[in-house]
Length: 204
Image 1 (tube, helix red, strand yellow):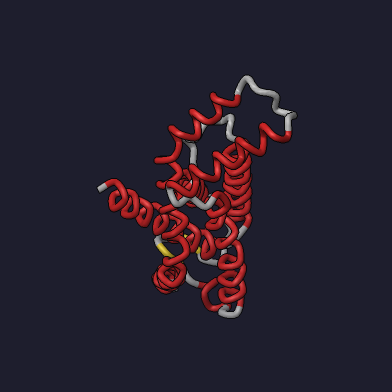
Image 2 (cartoon, rainbow, N blue to C red):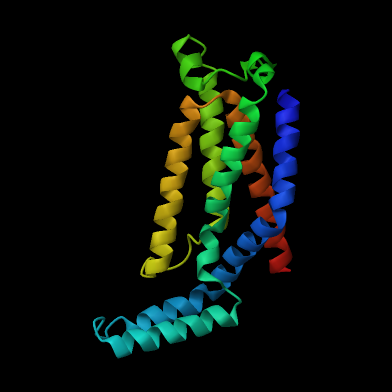
């Protein structure tokens, strides 16, 4: 059952690959656009930020940069929103197979939450939470635009959303079954590997 969870997780991610690949590509395109976006911010830094005409001109120039590098500003958060319905569907599927919760993988009970495992004296469940935390952090770090100037309001909002989502998942991993943690770890590793491939292809 443990291996079945991993294989099913990979199948789900392969089905979603066309969408998540585009998200990863957008992140790389945005990094290429970064120098011009920073120059744009400096250009308008000393101008009246309350002047509608000035701000409209700035927005138009920013959209021209996005168009030049094939950037879609809202696509960076797409992966975050895509993950949630997939997660809910996977949770429902697991709940329909009670036998899963009676099995083990590498000594971990699939039906036990890390919280209950730790309370019961099995501190190895801390490893599960740490792996979820690490893979979640690096999977989102791979697709968000950390290198974009913090003066870019859209970049700040995107970073805040991904940070909040990361913290939420880490907290949830403590109280959800190990089976779901395994799903999340698998999907995160897939994301990290996928984005490494996309980055290398774009940089060539």
